[in-house]
Length: 427
Ligand code: PMP
Image (cartoon, rainbow, N blue to C red; front, side):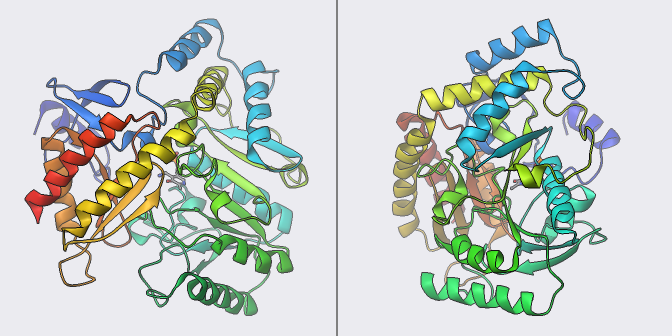
């Protein structure tokens, strides 16, 4: 163990599971690369979804943050805050939600908490529908809507949660069905649930499950759900913490692949929009946002420095069409990985969209998850100078690829070559 790892183990919780047998201390980054404390350089195929959506040490964001930090950071709730109003205006505009209001938080968990606060207050119900295998955070209420058991350490939730099928295509009772049959089966399941429950407040769902392994429900699933929800007055909350801001390439928001019948009632976002600064938030129609009889609910949500980061980052990603980049470069990467997978009996599926790509590993000749190989691929990729992630349901057997959205074609090729060799060496 390194000296820092030793100290980490002594003072931080045991359940902070670090990646790698020899955990990594990242000391600096630039663009799509990071360096560790020993001076090794890595191509970062995971940081784009963890923190740094656009690029490491992006000069535009660094400048905005340092200038604002040198000027003022003060209450964003008691006094007027220009960067917060400007970013809210921009997000309301791109959200597609009519008469949108935006509330800023410091994390995705807090954003989902706020969405639950709004939905339960608006509907006067503490029953919530969530997806099996979902991840929405680890606060007291967010664990209560997190269907991924590995990530929800307690079920003592203040909410009554019912879990719905559909977020994962290849597992569960509806595995193997075609798109239309799968959607019909999930809708029937949802209707069945609603038949014997007290009016739920909302359905919360990730358009593509992130921690759950970059799953790929068929397009249109949530549009079909929406019709059922609307008939009962149930709100639809899209958790765009991983899928938002163009990551999926074809769309700016993940929900757009699912719904041509209008935007969700509430959208939550976080992670990358601050390019590493803590920006999260909720967008909702004003009648929903304003149903609370609240004062401020976050001291640090919307501080000037995080809003300056969000504005600089949003400007950058729109001006440089990073959504288009995700579509083009992600498309090439998916194609190349699919070709490699065709030679590898242990790759069950390469799935995803844009720069959100999952590679599901199973034991050759079976449908059994292969978490051991996933861990080995992570180690081998690291040794080759590439950082990737893993995820999944009960077994973390999916490799997760989510680089910063500015990834170049050359970097995609370089990373794919390392990953292919990591797959070959672990077969
Ligand atoms: N929602 C989703 C879809 C997430 O992936 C995450 C984080 N992995 C969260 C919510 C929670 O966000 P945070 O860690 O910023 O609280």
